Length: 282
Image: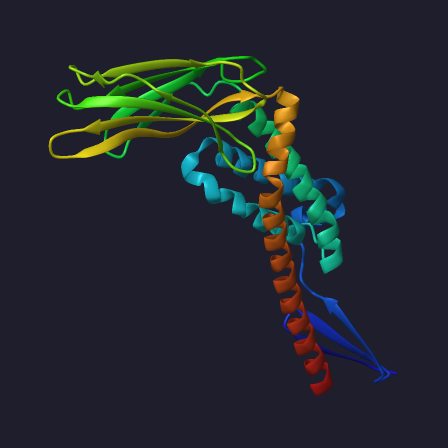
């Protein structure tokens, strides 16, 4: 009967009767690490959801951070690691429901932000003409809406012909109305436009304003680009549309998360093979 110990990195190999081999980790865990592991039922959702909510808010309210949403799979993976949640199937079992919860949270945040009046839209057209636009009303079930647009920095020597195109969204944008207005000039470089649309069907609408012009030397147009509004749904129905719109995005996040899991599983398998070879050598 004898005991012999051999240190291999963070592992201790014990030989009993030259027949039994046991591996045990010698790594010391901090009190915080022990707490996170023992209270995984609470710490895992907290470490996954709270940072992800910050990412979702950045995605919604800060245009320059729109791609931050792809940090969510990494956040889930890190939360699994620090709560000592191991195993491909276990991580998948917890990760997919967490992604579904985050999809619902994003819809809850995004719906009121998009559904209510976003205020005045500011922009610059392709020829550096500035414009502002807003809708009244913007959301809710109603029969008509008005678009108000102001263009500035127009060429006072040019005659413009305004067009308004109204599109109703679906699988594609479908032109539902087209209005051609009278020619206008802007002596002070400013042009105000207001137009009301009636007899709206339920839907999510986009509007495009175009000012065509022709001069002795050139022709072209000044355009606002597509302006979203109004939304002619009740808010609960619109929330369902928002939810369905982002299912594809969260499916992609889930796919990225699975790639993280497969990569981690591959590393663990490699480490296990190295340890088995070390045992055989010993």
